[in-house]
Amino acid sequence: MSALIVDHSSHGYEWSDLVRIWEETDAPEGCKVEIIEGIITVSPPPSNSHNMIAAKVQRRLYSVIPEDWGIYQTLGASIPSRDGLFIPDLAVMPEAALNTPGHFVPAADAELAVEITSPSNAGTDRITKAAGYAQAGVPLSLLIDSFAPGGPTVTLYGEPKGGVYRVLGAVPFGEKLHLPAPFDLTLDTAEFPVS
Image (cartoon, rainbow, N blue to C red; front, side):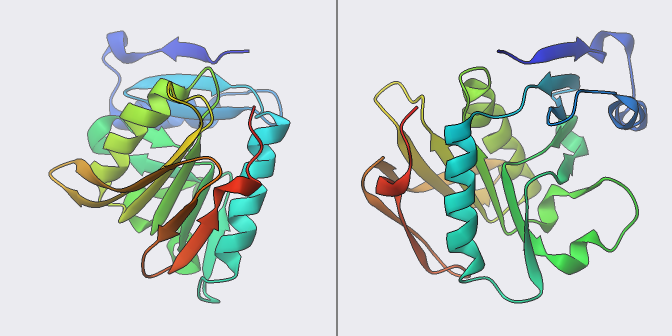
């Protein structure tokens, strides 16, 4: 199943209008509603293997983050300069970032954004979201790509500069990948199911 796209960009909507429409979108439970380059998208709930990967990464991250940080699976991360309001599969940030009213926070508040691809969103996760997180200054972005052309791959991006990340490491499923400080965590990707 692929994402439903509701294109409001041709109507000259401002950021505040897009956010209002996003907030008012009535999608079925479990669906993800995002703003991607000014376009409101509705994606179906993720697959079982997607959820299993998210749970494994989340469990490992909780073992190394400070007590006053959280890992969020349904939190909106806004990047108004890119007409984007993403919902990362996992967003790691200090709990204090959520001390504001509303349904989203600036993406810049995240220490790590994790995206796990699905067949319908792989290109968006690989390109658009990575560029958005880099522009927002998110220090680390982890792309878990079960549908990479050369086979399932995990790529760690970091050191954002000028809206572009540097690749800090990339491994095929089955190998280990180290996340640097503040996490100092080695992920064993052999635990990830292959779709």
